[in-house]
Amino acid sequence: MDTFPELGALSDPELKELIAQLTEEEQEVSYRRRILHGKIDILRAELVNRLRKKHEEGEAVISGADVQQLTDILAGKGLPGDGTL
Image (cartoon, rainbow, N blue to C red; front, side, top):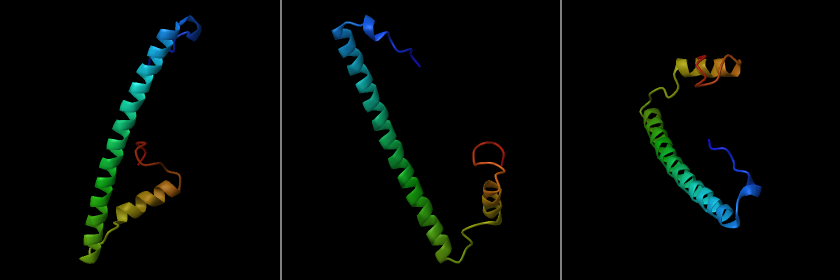
């Protein structure tokens, strides 16, 4: 990450340019975030549809491994993604 400049040393045009640059960067990051959220929503909808189909076909939707992982999380033995499970 870049260090933040000494604001008192910047001229008005430099300050305006920095504001414009950071505003543009924030807009790019926000756009990327919205794209990622959209993809996540699509993936979750697909997962829900698959689980619903399994349930309708009489298949087990939750496995014993899922229950054990939830039990471990609730017991404080680790969180998903932290490498302890």
